[in-house]
Length: 295
Image (cartoon, rainbow, N blue to C red):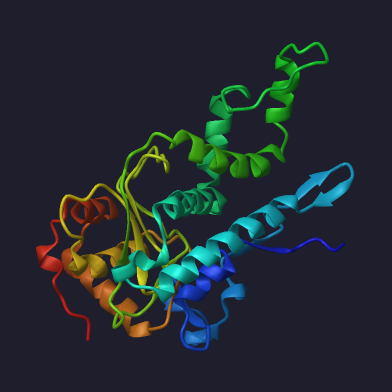
């Protein structure tokens, strides 16, 4: 059986939620501040992937079992996303409370699958021993083998396997977390926007997906919010959310409207805040000066 090659850190089903009626979008290069190939339309499968990123190489050859596992998770999550996108606030977007932790776990997987967080996880692996990372190697007598454990942890392929394992641990770490989950509609008149770093955390360092507040776009029409809200969500926040997605993108951002990116860049130029400041404004609801209607 042939091994998969293109391993998307943003799943194709997820990317389709930000496409136009022909399931395509334009790609904005945030480093050059230009649209790729002069605004050409691309399919979701053409971007946001790394070749063989989830392929494990052993003495027996290459194995893409991790990618196959991600595909199973993606297929299950895609069904939840489909219900959310096809339903409304009136019927809770077609989901129940038991679906919410699955969404949180998906966000965790997206976070750790991201190539831009590789150094964070590698530093974490270096900092702790194997047992502290949630694993243990024992000999035939049931004794902990520290030397072999350290060798195993330092294997080049260990990082790839642990990024999956670590995201699964997040669901256990967050078992007692009582933070509320919310889903909200996004104004249909707003253009789509999808960052290669799509999770907006309230914190900028020492991220803990299982306990930190965050905002995660589900599609061009829905957003997922993990935060205890004492009042109704302020829907005048959407421009600010999109601006943050633009500013925290590492390489590429997908959209169906070139002029919307120009609008967001002008908005950023006008206010000239740092990413950290924008996020503080967002999570503190201090957004009165962002009440600007996009034409």
